[in-house]
Length: 318
Ligand code: NCD
Image (spheres, rainbow, N blue to C red):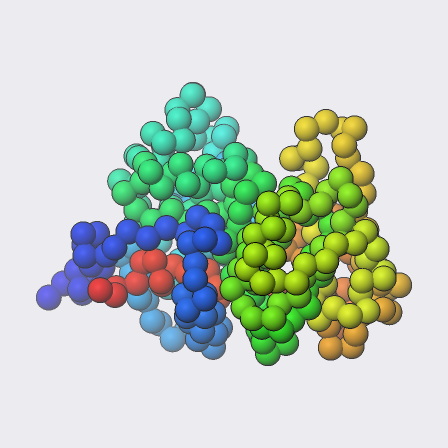
């Protein structure tokens, strides 16, 4: 029998699943994805396994990206699949001619088996699910969510510290506009005894509704503007950049606290420093040489986690 037909089941046999936000995931699913990511990390590219042979991933990026797009593309290629896409899609796709997001998704979903979408508008990925015949993966929707980043962040904590439950995590920087910290906080809330310290200037606080949701789910949440003071009891210091592109007016723009040697000197020896990247200047480059600087290892983990996510959404399972 034709091998391609046995490897790639027809769409009607695969239930349509999307990954739009933290609410798309529960703890067993998160743990299954992290376990699969661990297996992916142990595979050699030379193994020749190609579970997604014959499948096509479309990457539609309406906002800049380095890691999310390239790690999704590399993940699909490593699993034997293929990739089509538009980067800079606001200018290079028919959006530039005035086509709606829904129409673009309708058409692209007839060419590909899944779509990774990054878009400047919050809620764009949820809108896309209503127009799509194939799974939508949210690669970041404005200041909304970034669930695959949150999964790779959890994977990194697990890989570096051996656990997720019980950790004291400091989320620092522009928590108002950062989609990575919102998704991460909500996924951390699935694990027991997680303590969160939110470190930001008052005008860049995490949305009160999100903080309330976290508390209702049993997370102990504290807030401070003092990064140096907070560092001493953290297991994870997760730093983010100022999301200047999401500010309404220049008058709002201010600086976020910087992780430098002084902050490192306060951080416990076992702790790690994470950052979704890109870093602008909120982590001093002098920090890079410290073994606790985990952000480049974290970016590498994105490949394994996205392989696991693609295998979950597109793999040949009933
Ligand atoms: C993040 C994003 O796009 O939200 N980047 C990423 O995907 N690693 C963080 C950021 O841009 O600040």
